[in-house]
Image 1 (cartoon, helix red, strand yellow):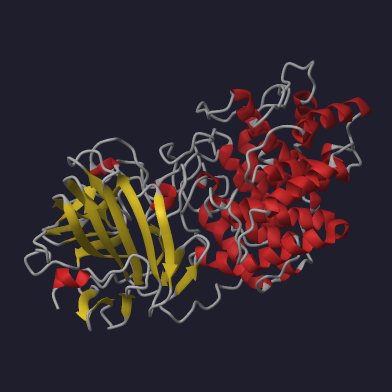
Image 2 (cartoon, rainbow, N blue to C red):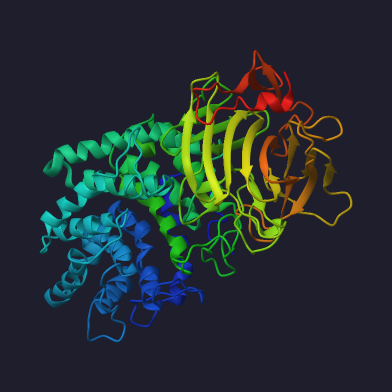
Length: 640
């Protein structure tokens, strides 16, 4: 059951109704005392009571702005009752102590937001004793250990709420915490989600670091004018970068962790509106925000009783993180922050506008901090990112060479075989053709813009005696990957293109697979994808005698974020100890797009320098000895 099925999601009234309709199905799962809410039996790594607090608190991210903007909701008595009982040590639904690194601190940030923006619902009706217990409970965050990342903003939000209702709070600790958070700032509007040399850049920058900073800037305002101005200026800088993460219809790029929060992708745009930061024309901001929410409303992301499921494009636990409980997806309610704005705000008065014109360079945008190139190919109807990879404990969610809005990415599901290795968008290596490893830890990464086009370089070491240098360059609708493998052991390789939905597989009239030496292509109603060995001759034999065979590899079900059944065009090879060069062209297109399969890039040596050229003759990869990880050795492989 989709609670948004009949909602056009166009007007302010529509979005007010959406906020109510999204939380209504949860009420049947609320505990008798109102303090706990558990909509499913799956669990996260933290205690079940913390998951129940998560279920109680996360809907507040949408309900509080609804109330602040004058929207109606008839369930506030249950939330007040839950807040009172959850913070009462003598009540059977008491939430218990929230010590160091407790998940409960994460959820109390939404309560802090409620005190700041909707005190008439969560604070004013409480008695003196009830208020005292709420303050005592929230104040545990003052001295608690918090992870050194966006978590520190939860202390800020709790203190903001206490400050706004005139309760005792620790403003000195708040300022020290903000100083630490600001130390994570990089440039061009980008933060890292923690110390810059340890944490990656992903969605936690827009929906956490920036969103919380914009909340602070608007609520505190002139009381901390300099810091508030910095938060606004950085968000404005970031907006021009983040806009490129969205497809024209509003879909965001699947990349990184916590993607089960889904339309939290839109929350940054709502945060700009809340803080009155016109980083782009209001019509573009509203369009980016509304289109993202609308396209999510069209996906099969709800359970049978209308609850948001764990998953991305459909329900799936395989893509989840250890901290995802059944209540976790309701961080998506962050998207509803614009409901706090009055109807006459420019955000609501503006007509939705499409994305701004993309650069003339084939829709390519280089982003230095996440080390990626965003590609928007209108002919192929394909929006994707090429990356050097970023180190993260969440592996393939950050480290592949390519990520696609249309085709998603896949996670590892088992130890043996390519089908469960999550090798789409990646080169996978194995000693015996069983246990495959993709790029998970990056030793070095550079975005090289010294040539005619951007080239992404990385070095990774899957074994102590194996080093892989990788270069990736756009040539839309293709991209090119070149690898230099130096190995002290025999290896098997499997290089995957984009994962294509094989919905309808089994019907003899659905789907086409071409598998032959040096290339593989798959065509299904949901799209086309292919890979070709750029070193191979007409027999599929590479310059050093290596033959990579083409294969269409069915992935394990429910491993891809966008489609539950997928197939990956793949090149398979075997490599003796020594140095090996691989060059691969990869392409994909949506159903109405053209992958231009018959016109792949070509690799040649010109004046002693290896050059990869797209079908139109444009150079897409050219590195001399001064570039990171020089490609000059390719000349010996393909002849001068």
